[in-house]
Image 1: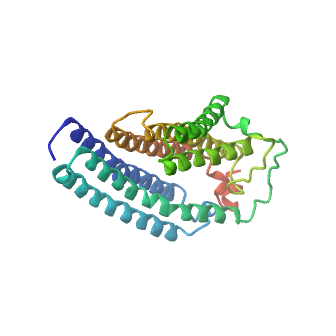
Image 2 (image 1 turned 90 degrees about the vertical axis):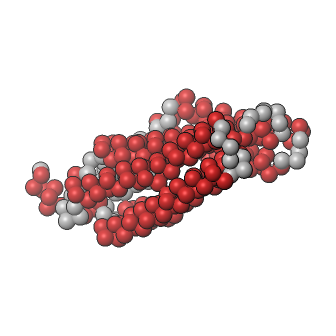
Image 3 (image 1 turned 90 degrees about the horizontal axis):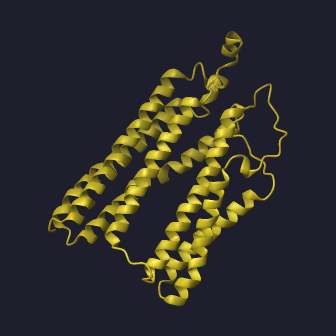
Amino acid sequence: MTVSFNSVLIAATFATQIFLLAYYLPRRRRRYQELIFTRYPPAEYPRLYPVSQDRMARTLALLKTIKLSIGVAAVFVLVLGFVHANSPFEYARWMMWTLVAQLVPMILSIPWVFKMARAFRTMPPPAVRSTELRPWRTGDFVSPFLIGLGLTGSVLAIGCAPIAWFQQPRPLNVIVVCAGASLAMLIRMLYVLLGPITFPRPDPYMTEGDTFRARQRRFNVLFLAAAFMGFYGAFMQLYAVHLVRFDLVYICIGVSVLVQLIALGSTSVHLHDFDRRDFSVYRADDDLKVAR
């Protein structure tokens, strides 16, 4: 491939994508998990480990191996694509397929996350439990600006569907996927916005403050995702019918950069939340009596 500004820009984006998703962020999470194991050992904090530490360590080690293997393969794709790709657009496609592969470990970890959540919820409750009598609403957790942003994005994507269809009905798959995804998000947002909702605790021992932040994070993610999917879906529909013209190479670069920013931000928020979390509630009863 001839060296050009676009090819160098793709290579730089590709390199940061590999570094962040395969090495830096997984290493940062692993180091924090090891710190959790050291600071809060299972012998003293048994309620923090609904699944044995050995099993958790094996799962984390397996995900680490998968991420590193994909990272090594991604480096080869980065180099080979820069040398042998026929055009910057083909090189950008190689980057996109590699991005999909790098997201596979995250997808594989989803069943494990749900399994941990179920294990926490099935733990025996504490002897003394607090009762929530307040009728919570979504507005107690999400700012009006973020609610409006999520609703606006979804409505915009749905509204662009008939415009794109009447302009050029050929890209039906793009219209259906983008508008359908935003419609599903809109229904979900309206469901959580209408009236009080029952919020189950993530686990029976979590403090009130930690429970509030967990719920707040959950709903912030919902409305942020709706806003992103809506604006991106509207753009892609208008792009598919040529009402918006943009070099596809820059779209690929933008998607890669956006995924990197989301991964960096979500990891930072996750680790910051753990820094603020009160782990004393997970100690053994004897330790709690001594502390009191």
